[in-house]
Length: 411
Image (tube, rainbow, N blue to C red):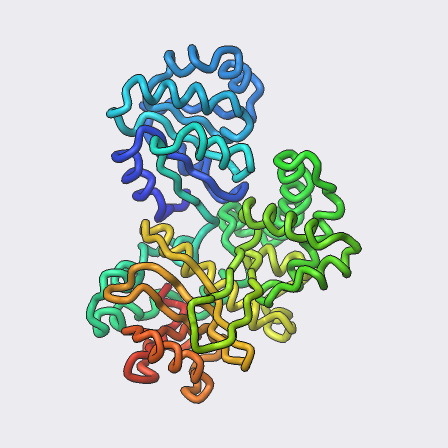
């Protein structure tokens, strides 16, 4: 079984809230994580018809009989649970760590949490394996050091590579879904990914959104893979698919809410620049991206036109998973001006004395300072103590007084 960094954050939330909700994409490891809680927890799976019927017969009675250390897996399938759960929590509001729900994101789940369980629930998102989790490395100290405003020398020391370049490349090509990582068979990995796409896209998302045309949405996701890492133009996508722009917006929301797509809004807080205000985004798993694009192996990826955008998306997702696993809240943005200046990722959070961390992502081993003019100007204009360049170098290097290049192998 693979160790997951987010486990400590689940335990932390259970000490502060009566109920914790663990959401995440299908097959990211939620059920396996719930199985590590201990024998005192009783688990009911709402995909099991007997378990589901037992709860639905009388939700209030069910929660009186199971009033503590209760796990309900795939909770989005039983909407009547949530109002009964609010009553059960309020019977003993001060007692923490009583209920743990898991599920894929859906409109019903999000609405029920916000309406019925507001103030009573801690929510945490679980993703597929991060780069360090795939190779069973402990969490990097880099994420907490960045947010604590640690001395720059400590940040540089924490940016030492912990993985080989081959390990980074293998993860990048394969993605982070746990089950393929547990098998040494390349044939199994290929079959798993193919069946995952067919099953998840056509069955699970269709069940969450009953009015969705599954075949057209599958075409949309295939097209979306070709736009991963690019500025999105909904009108162009709509024309290609022969649908309306509102339909494209709805589908983008579905892809984001079900954790297939990472929506990255534009940075709009610069008064001195004319900024591009269109969002961009990425397919969140690089292995899934490569499968959809029919990229057969790492050699084919190295010469494929999407290689740079694929690398960029993998690094963005690795960073965001690292902060999430450490319990650190950050919001991602991208930066582009109409004059052509661009920064791959702007992270908004608490980074010492600053609330902004700009990040440039490069596939190359070394980064030319002349190619980082946009990053340098952003750091100066926003008085950022640090700007990061993430590349494939062998060690961390200072490119400027406040710009540190770090290898992806340290993440």
